[in-house]
Amino acid sequence: MKPVIDLNAVCEKSPDVIAREIEDEILIVPLVAGIGDADDELYTLNETGQAIWQALDGRRTLNEVAALLAEEFDAPLDEVNTDVLGFTVELTGRGILVAKS
Image (tube, rainbow, N blue to C red):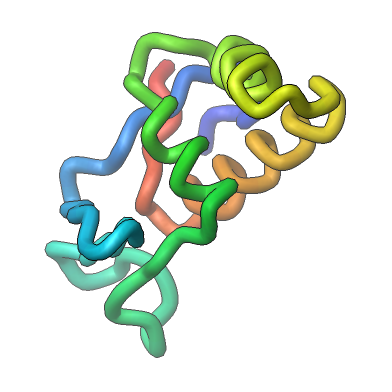
């Protein structure tokens, strides 16, 4: 059974991907088959995705990540919560992030 992803979840980067920052972009490369979509071999993150990715440390809850980013970017917490949750649900579903139990 897959863990439920909500704002109380803690997510970390999958050991089956590597991420590198190249010219202000984060590139994510799957190391094993079955990560992401069959058509996608590389992933790049937009500015919002990059900020979320960098804040996910495997210790903070998604709620803590959202609060940190809302303060850093002076953005409404409810909007940041939505972005963080959508990002982590999408990337967990693709195997790029792992929800810790």
